[in-house]
Image (cartoon, rainbow, N blue to C red):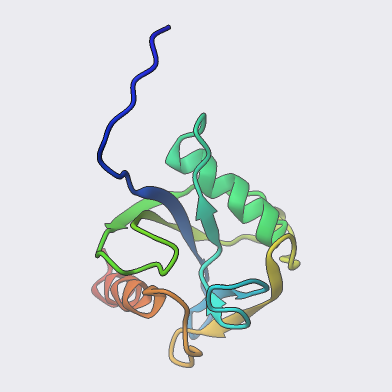
Length: 146
């Protein structure tokens, strides 16, 4: 097979997952980052896509690695691609939304997560990357019922 190379830079691709728990006040599962960038800050579970996997496969793998949760139905939510959203370089992310159910397992921090916690959508901490912007979109979707 012939190998192709290009002279222009290419972006990295990530998958992030907004894991919701539907309580009286809906909650979201966030992980506390163990490493830089944004060490000790809260973020959506997620990470870089590997070369041989789809965006959904990356989301499922990252969710399992960071929280121990076996993903159920993942709903493709939106794509975020603003330049500068990740200090490590040009990064595009596909965000998925998932409703957590008990049979998926109890979340436990793993790999590059220092901790994890459920937060009420009205009491979010300061978030890493552009995750506050992403969660504002998720909250708007919940309020509008779409």
